Image (cartoon, rainbow, N blue to C red; front, side, top):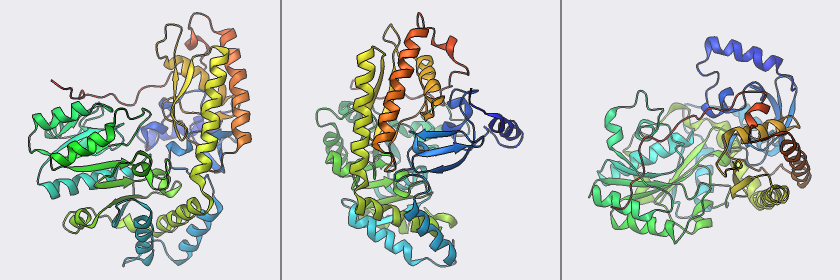
Length: 436
């Protein structure tokens, strides 16, 4: 067993003073195999982190997406330290704001202006407000993973306490690869849809020119196409999912990998749309905190100079293909799906049904050998992951799968768990619209 003494002590202390033990649902103990996984991290370097008890793990979660270059990355750290010496926040704008905006406009397709926020949720919500101001409409057509936790969007999920009832009437859901569902939303809500919001991809591949159809339908109905590139941006391509999938958004939002873990996000677009932010209240005292801006400039420059995204694709492909080859060879139905830089893990029991207890046992056994994978979230690769990291992980995977197959009978995976099966964070309350 992994030593969790300090983690458990802090968890008990947190229960008295910190709702949910942490500020992010996906990082809570209940989102892992509670009782086996550590609860609190202490430090990190490169592709690894140490927990508060000194256990070290190869991290295939990457902070749930933001760690694009690696932990404790020298060039980013140096930029932060240099800015820290000059000041964190000022009573006037700082010149680095202009420098970062210029850098993004140089890189991002169709970006003539950029505006900064502190989280992906805030960026996409800012884009929603802008779209409503531009179109003078209120309803939103949405297709995504549910990662924006403001009232306009949280109305669709089970964690909707405190969300005004009217918000539920303003959000319409359509499924990925279902352009007809989007058409039906416009038919049912004529001249009422302000914006279509979509992630270029989650794990599913676009089929039958789906994204291009979304672009066309949105334009034909005088709505704003908001691309949620909080995850795809600065991972699929330096120029984002717009470049990778050949689709142009009207307003495009970035976060996560943009700042290598720094609290920053961006809203980008052509001047004709971005100028609305001079009239729309999207403003916060800490948006212009300059250590994040300086560190983000350094992050992007590293991506450019070292072609870090190409490395992540190569290492991710080695992992993706190697994992599926091993599990296929030994007949262990645990598959990596999605893309080499945004992967999902699917585990299926002997009846070919998805099994959370099977997945929990697999990640539990990998954790005990020093490999950290979330049973609830995606897998990511950073620039700091090496071929040796991947090859050693795959060797460990083979051993772990062999042992599970020898010891588990009749799908009794839960019997071999040393902790609790993770609990779902939320479920969808509003079903996707279908063509009538």
